[in-house]
Length: 337
Figure 1 (cartoon, rainbow, N blue to C red):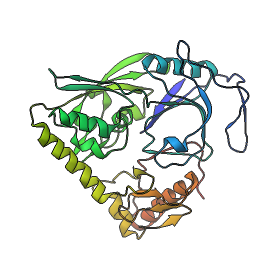
Figure 2: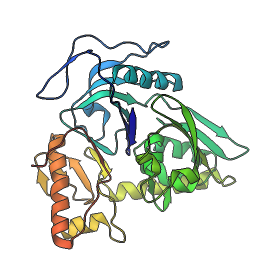
Figure 3: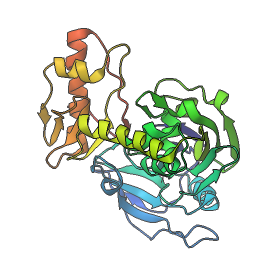
Figure 4: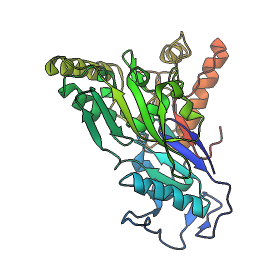
C-alpha cells in the first residue's frame, strides 16, 4: 500500500487484489451496488456506499464516493485504513473539501471524512493547542483569540481544516502554519502513529513534505504567544476576516485561490491583465471580484471548472511564458476539452 498527500485530501493506493464486493459501471467508474457497507470493527460507525461528494466539497461538484466513512476517533480511523487495506481499496482522506476538485465520475475506493475528528486541548502553561485534523480553521482562530493568544489570527478566513492546512502550509495575511507548528501525529497506511516535528515537515510556500510522503495528519500541536488582551486579539482576528471578505467573493461556491502565486508575481494580477475576469466555460466563471477565484456560477460541473482552469493556464502561458501551478487539488479522472 502506498500513500500520497494533497491539500485537503490524502490519497492512499493499495496494489492488493480487490475482493469482489461490488460491480462497477464502466461509464462512470462508480458502483452498481451489490451489498451495503459494513460497520467498522468495534464501532457503530458505518461504511456507506455511493455517497455524493458534491455535498462535501466547497465547489459543490463531483460524483460519488464508492465508499465513505466518517470515523469518530483515532481508533475508527485506524480501523478504516485496515478495512480498506483488507479489501484492496484506494483511500482518500477528506477534510472540508475546500481546496479540491472532484471529478464528475467520482472517486473509487474509500473516502474517509475527518468531520468528527474535532478534539481541542489547550495547554495554558505552554500556550499550546493540540487539535484534531477535522477542526475548522476559522473556529479554531476565534477560540485561540478568546484566550488572548496571538499567532493564529490569519487563519480566521480560511475555510479549511487543520489537517489540510498542515499538509499545504496554509497561510494568509503574512502568517502560515510553518510559523506556529510544533508537531503532528500522523498515520501510516497500516494505521501506525508517528510524530513529525517542524524540521521534518520541510515547510515552504504552500507546501510540505506531507504532499509527497505516505502520511496522514490525525492531530497537530501549535505554539502561540500568550499575554495579550483577548479583546485586542479578537479585534485583529476580525480585521483579518473583514479584509478577506472585502476582497474575495463569497456569494457563490468556490475553492478559494485556484493557483499558487508564481513569485514575485501574483496569479490574480496575471489573470486579470489577461482579460479573463468574468470569463466562463459552462457554469464555471473566473470571479470578477478576485481573478484567482473560479466560481460555480450556474450549475457548473467539475469538467467545466477543470476546463476553465486549463484555459486560464494556457492564456497566461501564451502571454507571459509563465506556468500557473494549481493550488487546488484534482481528484479522479479529468480530460481537457
